[in-house]
Length: 227
Image 1 (cartoon, rainbow, N blue to C red):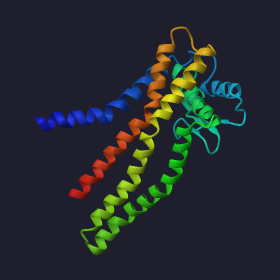
Image 2: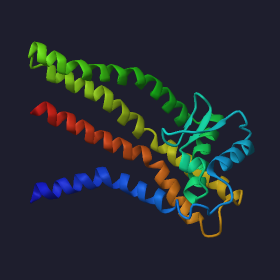
Image 3: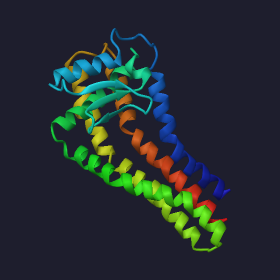
Image 4: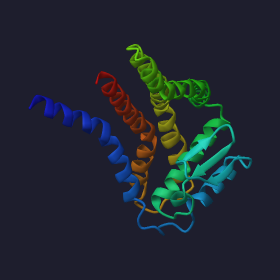
């Protein structure tokens, strides 16, 4: 009974944030035509207002994000073309990151540098994960398991580190940048401000949710190695 309760508790911690984020973003995706303009159009307006004409607004399938290297706000099709509260709020959140970049916001600069440093480590870890099973079959050396674990930690551990240091930056983009722009510019319909806050909070916690899912993957790798 104890282990069942423990499993339920762990599952709630890992899957709960992801479910909550998905629920919030989907809930305020309706009605789909609540606003006259799209998320992509609002992103362009806010960027121009912030004197960031050089920052592009692009459509992507890789998740909503701001690319500080390419100087681009990228939105998924439902946000780029959408006119829901979710679409315009998420667009404002990503513009918030562009303004952080303009202002030299230190946490964003640190995260950008960390991502650049983590990329080769993740590639090395992925390479180890690919060759470890082959080495195990050919050599039948028990230490191959340790090599497998090292590859998993290099690949997944670096992702967790990046995600966790991202939260303060995300909260700042949501509540120190996006929300003031939406409220001061009167872009929100009457009564939508509390709901926009929920969306902005969900947007900020997206990376934390991703890090928890990565922890689950590390647990899976560890279970494989113990067999």
